[in-house]
Image (cartoon, rainbow, N blue to C red; front, side, top):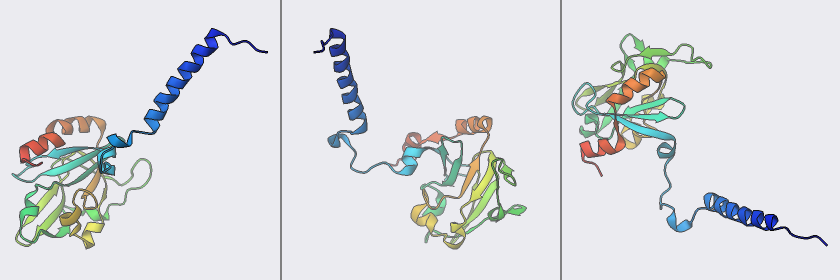
Length: 195
């Protein structure tokens, strides 16, 4: 017959407390869960906004991922969405080159074009006017959203998801400079009086 030491009893009680904590972490209380789970954008990206970028009411969003990549697009308060009929066409042929022809390859992102923050990414056309969409962040252009060429209505329907404009890769030092000029989601909502 074996004897039980006091030390063994204490260790077992600690294990049960640790197990309870682990269970609480892994299996959250159903009453405390949100009704709608957070989207992948909300859980994987930090959202910033470039307010009045180069012109009044030309607002852009910048979704920053933990790996350093930035997704650029038009914010819901951009003046192009206020035009009758919304956005009708998008043209990536601005400047000296067609941005839609960029093919980046490999780990070192060979053939990536390097742009300043105010460089034009594309031209967005509405029924009455056209607007230039800018990079907002100094860095390398990795890709533009090819879906927008044939389906520009994605910008009207889902600008913050499938209707993104481009993906940029800024250097860490360039990102810190750009971040200083951007505002957070809460500040953006206050400035634009959104709920």
